[in-house]
Length: 215
Image 1: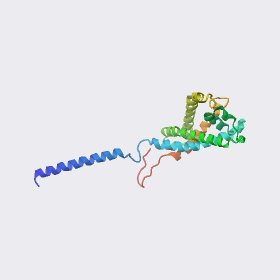
Image 2: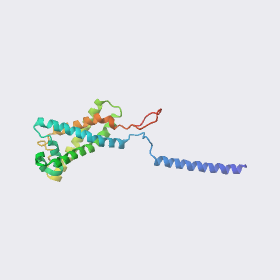
Image 3: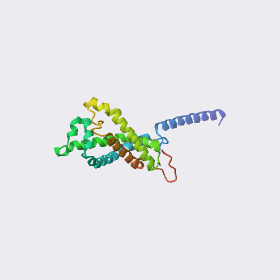
Image 4: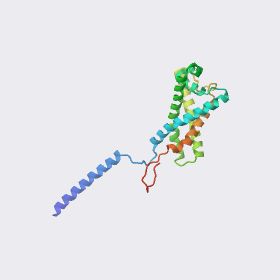
């Protein structure tokens, strides 16, 4: 084989190598790295959405159990939440008047709200606490974030949005829903999220003999 032929073959090999490098680069861009090395925010947002439903149910049960001690109906919190779609009329509802379906919708609204709040709460908890934080740290962080979300949702949004929409501020009226009750309910929500925290952690499958470095 003469020198000219060898050079042509070498040029062909270089072109093939360049083409393969381009294909590999395109494949790496199109296919995300798995497991992700960076913070897996979408996974933790989904975890918060699901765990938020459980935490909301727990906080509602705690509120319903303690309400009679304050001389209130166990469904008092649901009545207050129902003022958002129904206005002041929700405060006069009672189970004896055949309002069971409406109360069921109120419970659904409450749990749905917990699912939405669970997304930023759990996402922030993971960012602050990391993977192996002790329960005490998780509890403090969860309670603080829950109180922050309560302040934003109640006094940053509902305090002006409900009057604008329905002509009254029943959710933020301290005579109807004392601030300490609303804050306490949110703290229970945050503490429950802290307790459930390990269930939402991302742990990718890895074959035996490999290390797990995913966030």
